[in-house]
Length: 96
Image (cartoon, rainbow, N blue to C red):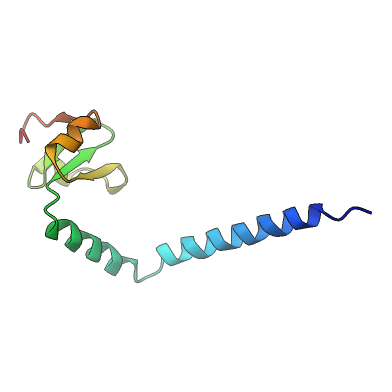
């Protein structure tokens, strides 16, 4: 009897276990500290623009509209040019 298919099943099980471990590591209680570290790196490197994937607009960091972007739709840009190259339009309020 050919038992090669067990290798495939074992690989899939190992892959799913690794993904679950990664997911738990990201969702761990200490992940807020990681988010804070990322925010500090962003501030240190002067990433000033936030893009909104739903409205396809980008904003200055201090714009009121930027504060209302849900985190899952927020994109950070190093420069205005990078946001424009991604096809986003400037916010009419803050005019970045």
